[in-house]
Length: 138
Image 1 (spheres, rainbow, N blue to C red):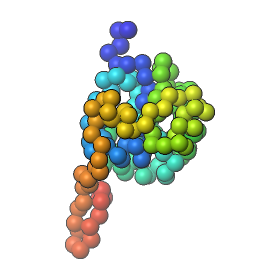
Image 2: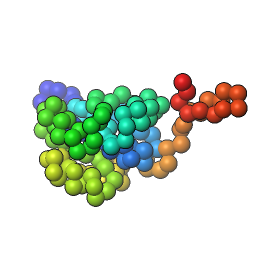
Image 3: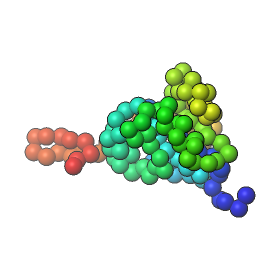
Image 4: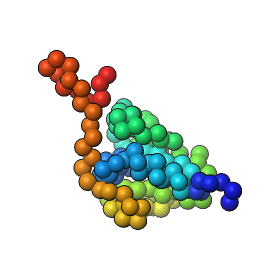
């Protein structure tokens, strides 16, 4: 294929993404072999937006007001690639992937294969305002 990017759509379940020490770098490296990379979750939209903004992650798609199941169906329909892979953390994600026609890969397996580092990602931007400490302010 002449396209330098892969023919895969890659979705990270938010909790899986949070298990990575360098989520921004993971997203950037995944773009080398994925055409689209995004985040899905059942959390409210602002949780994903705040997290990805804080980590400076540019996503091609995210759950929005939909839950994970509806998001996977919608993304598969709208992002036409040869493969759709969900990176998740457990049984619920496996079942959801199977029901929506996605391949499933556990975050620890994905990290091992891609050379990503797992661990607590502690790079939180905390800004002190007087006696208040706030993450991702404003």
